[in-house]
Image (cartoon, rainbow, N blue to C red):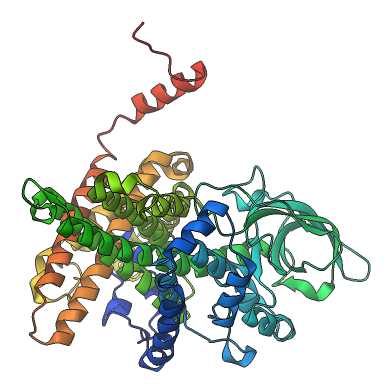
Length: 582
């Protein structure tokens, strides 16, 4: 069920937290996949299970060899896994963002490389065409992309640019006939050796050397791929460099407007977050199954290790992280499906939280397996290798934390300016002054008067204490954001350790909103039925987040940042560790 349309001011609940506000109208009832889509989605999931189950040894061989055989890729095409998000009018399955994410959950239960092959195609490879393509461009390419006749790849990253998408050196110059001459090299391109359709970003002429997005076909002269990269994980997926040597790109192959490529790239990455999130969730679910089986079957000191509290602690942590991850990814998917324009902070928060949750779950599952977890014949070591990339690609988690913190504080800063203007003449002209005290200003006034704040009031009664903490945490975050801006002003751009703490608090609080809303909706649906496990989930998450948020916000005032930076500078200047016991 898609959330109902609301006022645009209510569209970014994560940004609202930086103002100490709850923008929760889209969270209740917690969004679900529509009834109309469930039937077709169930058929897809059943097909995935039939095709991928029992192939564990085969996936291990793919990993060892570092490639997927062409016949295997052809089977993926026959299953329709390259058509998942392509509209039915172009011969695709037309799944919603949420439905697509759920399919990647299923494939990731079996093999991360498979998920990456189909995910890079849909999540980012052809997404710019869906979002910004003309009708003619869509008619020309989408049917071929749906069948897998053309596999898609996303070409943004370059040597030396990394997460700094605006610093690409690949360039395109306009020709007299309206076409473009494209030259440059992209690195670490998933599907780089197999794709026939590339979404390529290049610098173009204009103010500041702006970037433009182009459609490029492999068959055009000057397009070539390098050898497959020898990777730590996701080894079976095809990752290569892609080179463009004076490629002649037709005028009608620009995606969006010339010079607006950065906007295209960011929109694609934001829209693609739920694919990565779904993949992480699927891996977590399978790891939890392995951990439960391992802990119940393994005996130590005369009893199953599942009876040990320290093992139960791990199982509970893994379960909570998976539920929280599924909650935030589901909500972000619903925002995309509802056509919400401003969800970039929510999408970034989901990527950071879910990728790090999977890393923790994989580590804990391996620990429960003991020595077996370290052996290649068991699935744990490969999952650990495969999942490590999630914290790096599609924007490193460090860069995304800075984006989350700075974006949220920018909105808070804009509101602070409005407060200053409104309060300035409040006593000379009370009516005019109070008229300007909207949004942020009203909230700030309510914190020092008995008027009270709005509450997370739709949370189930069993979770009111957890909701009260969440409200208090949001209020503290809002105050911290204001104090930080007053202290650093524009200098906040350089205060990365400060921004990280603000961002981490916002991420944990936003995930908390999703968790409490989802559990509350489950309680409402069951109408008095037993929801003890779900309530326990919510309470465990709240305790987990409460500790982290408290530490993050306290760290804004009490920290060892100065000594930490001095220590780092010393190590850097000396070229490494400079102490030895000899």
